[in-house]
Image (tube, rainbow, N blue to C red; front, side, top):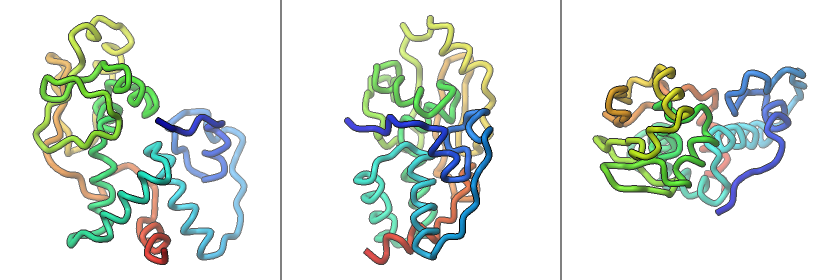
Length: 192
């Protein structure tokens, strides 16, 4: 399994957006540069990839599947990325960052409908219940993360007493807190 292991803050400054949700990511400031049309498309693609921590091969497959779909392409794209298990673990508040969410899934702390799932890219279906493993409920960091975090996503439901969360419906692109121009990404891959 491959993932980006380089300097995160450099990436955030280059993209001009705090893609890693860290308070100090943009402390040094951002250099504004004039970009060509291709440069803008590439930058938007890199922003979305960095937000979700997806590598090129997986991301390309998700975008092409969204382009082939008969419904609104940007909604299908964002729904596919938002339904990833590592992302939902982060959005529900089990983890404080997306990287921590991915690690929790990899290490087997998360159950989906009572079954252990250790694949971060696992696609959660509407109605699936995501819980913390019984042994992991004793870890103070996980408990603190989950109880202190309020979710702002209207497509998720959180049950603090049961340490569980649920995807109640598919999100639209307007509901997801990601600053990206989806049309540029779709244009970038449509030329290929």
